[in-house]
Image 1 (cartoon, one colour):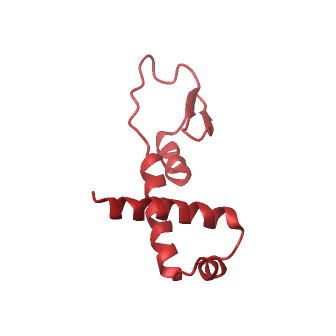
Image 2 (cartoon, one colour):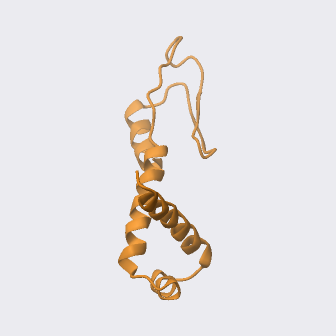
Length: 100
């Protein structure tokens, strides 16, 4: 990757970080920075995609007797999900799709 492109990516990360910490609307922040709203939107979409990629659910292998103990799932952001020993697998999948 060229230095020019790498600088652009770093700038995009800084732009999104600055916007999120500014408390301003997208339009007001872009006016302050002298850029088009579509430019900020591009970097926001890219950053959101990166966050979703990092937060994806990984496969889990359960060993031992099924339903023997309650299950606790701790996600990367610290969110804890506890289900009873006789949980409904389909309901758990739906819940994980909402959380994820």
